[in-house]
Amino acid sequence: MPDVIVYDPSRNWILLIEAVTSAGPIDGKRRKELKDLFKNDTAGLVFVTAFSDRKTMRRFLDQISWETEVWIADNPDHIIHFDGERFLGPYPDTQPT
Image (cartoon, rainbow, N blue to C red; front, side):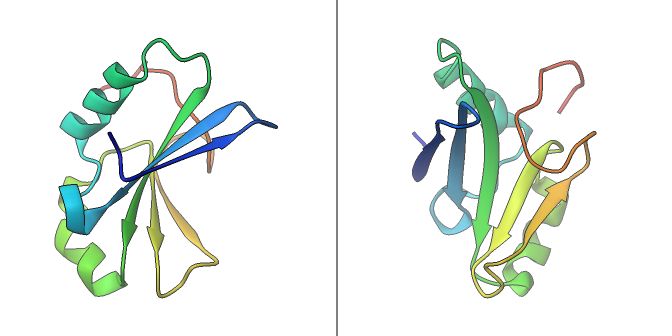
């Protein structure tokens, strides 16, 4: 299970949030594991890796999966999106991770 699960009923999204300090970033392997874990849910899945600061994030940049989000605690009003056609939201599995 991810560290935090948040459901947004207005959008029917489930935000799956991993603290990098507990399990590492959401890389391609972890993204697939989480998708498999929630495969029977009809809500869209949004994958977020949480970092304490940018310095920590830089150590993991090459591991973060595309079509995921990054949140940094020391700058909580912003989110960083890793590629994709839109900023925040679930993505279908049409492209490799």
